[in-house]
Length: 391
Image 1 (cartoon, helix red, strand yellow):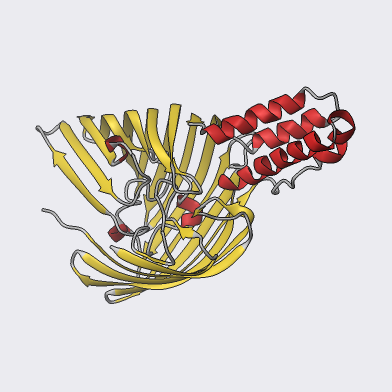
Image 2 (cartoon, one colour; image 1 turned 90 degrees about the vertical axis):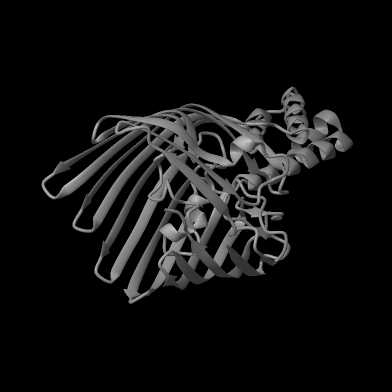
């Protein structure tokens, strides 16, 4: 449970990740308040099963399946080998299995510049995990294949169904002497449901393509990329965590590749922490940077006026403006610097306080609700109590 206050970025709603509805005001409990539960079952040594659900602020009309994070049946043919069928987590982050379990990490939340974009946090299919030891090192390899239906929220907080198929996710980690290193990869076919407004824009752009003006087709292709609704997506990441003595260093870097889309971006963060008794003090810096610069609105009116007339050319220019603005619904371009502390005041509960300074570049506010495409700077102040319970 937590509250976050925002200054700057007027009328924007802060979101923890793309599946959330987001804050409706500058002071809100919606982004960081979650309630989760997990039921585990063991039917003898080789068999296991689990169901995990997370309640949080989501867009309206979200189906029950979006609430279920994990639901699987597992079998261990060998002590270090596990096979799971059902819904499991994709092993693509350092905190892939605990991103919604606030007690598991030191910060108020996993850095949104790195974690906030991904709706593909669970996969329906088959999951194979193998562990082994070499010397003083413990290795773990995990591969997951399957598909998924889920939902994200658009810039206005409306629900957008997402379908992912042909997913393959693999992770490899090595841990020794307090140092954990992890490599991850995911590839899949992603499809977003298209609302009537986007369909109308696409039809309007295709109609423009028929006008015999040199170079117009290329301009239409670029504008169409802003209206991305799906395609092959690949994700590669590397992570490291060093935790020994009072010091903790955590870092992750990734590259998301989505051809002909504003989603192409590189992400990274680094955090340094120091523990004294029950209190951990930390600093964190993160950045998400698109592969391509934001595209400016092209001047279609000047080229089209001689062929279709000034009135029709102005209508085409308005269409180009809407299509250019649509790119900011998907484009992440921001950096964040923060500091805070975690106080473990009980065996199963921690109080957290964190202050973040964010800097959103123009047309880079995809992580915010009701953003207007402009650049913005501001401050977030977060106070949370994260706890776990159970046998």
